[in-house]
Image (tube, rainbow, N blue to C red):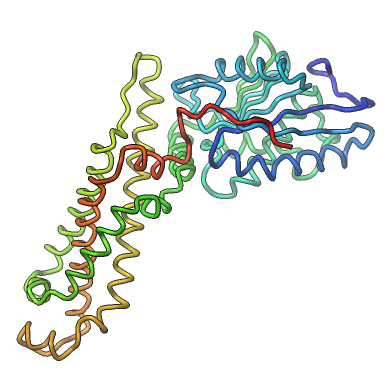
Length: 365
């Protein structure tokens, strides 16, 4: 096994294990392994690089970077790798600052907190960060050794915040600024949950929402109610419908977590904020889809002459818009009723791409 901190300029084979958490991290790791192998081979062709990928949660939250380093080190020894890089979805923090990356040459372990990289350009940022971390693990910190886009761990650190040099074992930790870094971390966690897929995963809620929307559009009483209500009240109904289905999903399925000990309280708070953001954005996506569907079908389901007879005046575009808004809000409320029929497991599977109780699968590649 290669000695930590020494760059293997003429080795037969160097094995870099790439461990990813399930979900978004796994998707990124599948492409990252090829990118990492190609970049390292182009700059050091005398070394044969092998990058096996493994999907493993390693630790159960709440956990800190030291716990992850220890778990990754154990996996490295078990698999007989030379180095290991762990892509995690866990929010890691040091002195209130989000941890973006952590390289420990002594243990031959590197960590990347994917949510801390943000939601935009995640694949590129992860690639640049991982290659820079591998360079740090191998003891190559000179810019000329790996140039171009892959020499950018220091650049990534300057973009995201600042670096901290740990005095004890020589490890390097990159942290983000307190305010912007925590906001980027939260956005990254929400993105990892893919909130736009929430409604698709809840078949009963979606069916109830569609049925309620169709019923609202063809009911003359709803036509008259929409015409009588002003936009302030209609907006309040729309907000109330989003709040109702959000509460039904979070409370009904027990998505809100509680810290079992004080050390994990901050991490659990981030989980809860990310869960709330995920569900709210997922419900808003559902309501937007219902609004578009109602807008497209209302001219067919609501003939102008019948609409005019029921509201007692000439039909204008604004009358259709108010009806469509009310129908989509009522449909969202119907989705809340359907959400109550969903199993807790179905809601959790739809709300979380990252599964905390996931145990791992055999290595790939």
